[in-house]
Image 1 (cartoon, one colour):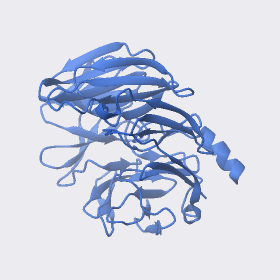
Image 2: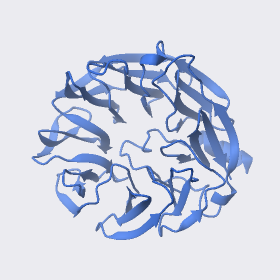
Image 3: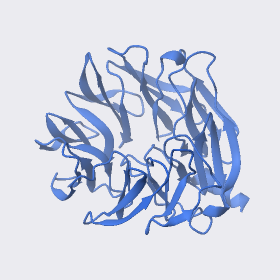
Image 4: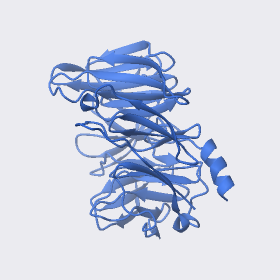
Amino acid sequence: MLAQLATAALLSAWTAPGYSPADTYYNPSESVINAGTVNALESRWTAPLATSPSWSCSGPSQPLVSGGRVFVTEATGIAAFQAGTGRLSWRYRWASPEDESTPRLAVAGGLLIAANHGCQSQSDPNGAVLALHVTSGKEAWSAGTSFPVETLVVDKGIAAVSGSSESDTPEVTGLRVTDGTERWTLLNYKSSGVSANGRLMINGAGTRTISITTGKALWSKRVTWNAQAATPAGDRFYVTDPSRALIAVNAATGATAWTAPRKASTQIAADGRRVYRVIPRGIEALNARTARPEWTATFRGNTSQPVRAGGLLYTAVDAGQPLGILHAATGKRASTGHQIGTLNPGPVTVTGGRLYLTRSNAVWAYAP
């Protein structure tokens, strides 16, 4: 079993916070951790993260996994650990940790893309996009931005970053992943960082969907939509609007498939069958085709970003509660979560027969 887990860890991947550019938080390939094995999860390794001797704006993030390595941010920069053993592979250290926000990460083309901004200036912070070789942590390229980077999505060989500040016009910029060359820039628009098979939704004066490779418009609407996720197939966006509705939108045409009034959530997961959304002290599942509510699960604390993998749904719960683990089809408890315990706010990563999370100032790996 241990040999199988080690092999699975080498082959597994979770290359963006939401699993993929679609921000689905759904791993369709996971099969080792399921309803039959989840209660047998135990800690396989833990690795401490670096601390800063002085003030730092950066801290632990959701682990990403690719090429047999686990990538996670820390107070002084970014660290990579071997997925099977937790042994340190490399560390990249900021020159000035006190002026580096926690970066957004993604893996593509053998590179770890990190995008963040300075944290000392409140009125005019600048941003930066950095590419590191996943095997060595050595810098491949870097590019500065005049705006603070608030979102990052990497798809079709392009890293799209977006942001604004009190003194910076909203901007979305596409950089080539291989060398950081700017491919296109759009002013007066921002992106929430969701790509539906190469279609990037942006908003400013209305909503526009563009090609992530060229920046050219594909369709536009006068309404203001914010993309929260796309379907695993990339054929629909799930968006929210000012009326707090959750809306399914055809990614190719902008046509509305359904509208769920007062169901807006900025934390959803989508597996093609259901849309799972955070509600106060719980999770609600909607039918992906009709938006009809299928089930609701309640907890003793507030929930956060749901994660779907291996027939299960995971959510961190505050108020000192253990990780919430549900059957995705029914919403019933699949496990008490006590074998995992509490964790830092934010999503877990489930891939290759392992569950990765950050707790306090360390990264942990669990497996059956």
